[in-house]
Each structure stands twice: as structure tokens, then as C-alpha cells.
Length: 78
Picture 1 (cartoon, rainbow, N blue to C red):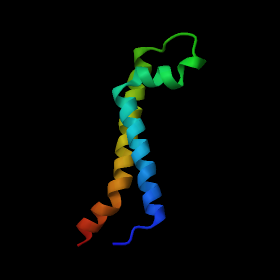
Picture 2: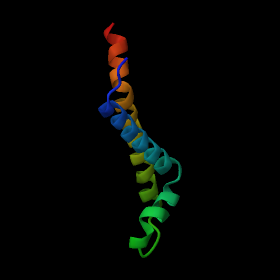
Picture 3: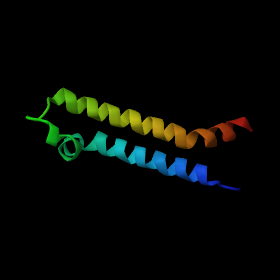
């Protein structure tokens, strides 16, 4: 099976998005402190961190669908 460069780049991009989503879902406060705290005067509410978790989960689902989509389509197309 021939794998071209576009496929590899897309897979790596989706893996990075999946990893970022996983980090955001598991450690929202750490992500906020690392990337957003320099802009804030005080720590955000719990609702903000809940939204970050939900966004992380959605990002993981989308990245998984993009990574596994072609394989699943080929499997069910047989």
C-alpha cells in the first residue's frame, strides 16, 4: 500500500489535534495557566473550565473521525 506525503502530514496534524484535545479535556487548568493566564487578571469560573473540557472532547472526536474515516469507509465499502 502506497502512503503519500499528504496522508502522513494529515495523520500527524490530526494526532497533534487529538493530543491537544486530550490535554484540554484532562487538564483544563494547566492548559489555561500555560496558554491563557498571561492575559487574565483573575482565574476564570468553573463554567469556563467545563467548556474547555467539552471543547477538548469535541476536538478529540473530530480528530478521531478524520483519522479513522477513510479506514472505516474502506472497511464498510467491501
